[in-house]
Structures are given as C-alpha cells and as structure tokens.
Amino acid sequence: MLATLGSIVFEASAELVRTFGDAALKTSARWEAHEVIGRKPVQEYLGPALRTLGFAVRLDARLGVDPEAEAAALRDSVEQGEVLAFVLGGRPVGDWIIKELSETWRHVTADGRVQVIVVELSLEEYA
Image (cartoon, rainbow, N blue to C red; front, side, top):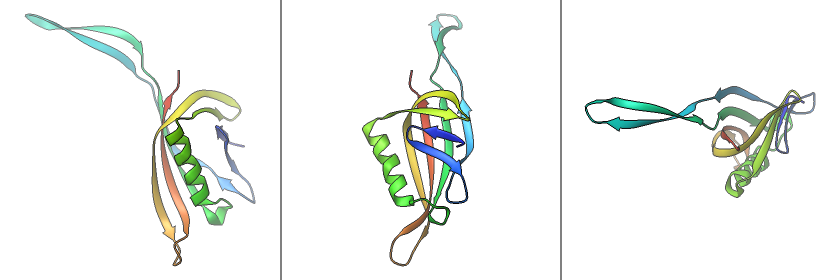
C-alpha cells in the first residue's frame, strides 16, 4: 500500500495498479493589507492558510480497476462533501476535501465503455 485517501487505496501489485503522480502540496499564509493615507499599505499577518494538494490518478481497466465505477465514486465524494483522511506510507498527512475533480477519458471502446480515465484531484485541507 502506497497511500490511502479515505477508502481509496493506492497500491501496485501483480493484480492491480492504482497509483498517483505529479503530487503537489501548497502551503501559504493569509495576509491583509490595510490602506494608509499618504503611505504604503501596512501588512498584517492573519495566520496560515489551508494547505492544498493536487495529483493525477490513472484509472486503467488493463491494470485491474473499473475506471467508470471509480471515477463515479470520486464524483460522489465531491458532491457529498466527504472529509477524507490522506495517509502516505503509513504517515497521516491530514484530513482533506476534494474541491475539484476533472476527468480525461483517454480510451473509449467502440461500444462506449471507458477503458482509461485520468482524474485530476484538487484537495483542500479540512481543519
């Protein structure tokens, strides 16, 4: 097991490959600029902002997954506002919500079955 996001298990074995790539974690701060007449604005530190995390997942029927069912489950998670724990290599990374999900259907058969879907997840920390 490489990682988990809620009930989704990222793994690579002889029977199944479900991994993610291009993961990017963003950490930022909240600042407010207060206008001052005749001078430059004064900056005030408000505190840390929510972290964001993004990555892509290839759902490929040839690698043991059901791309349409797994993409549908992710869509449901977004639409239901689920809070998901992310664990990487056994280490908790925090609780997250999926703010945005985009799907690219890479291969569709002649009878309309989607064989490969690449999903891009944009997560936001749930504090």
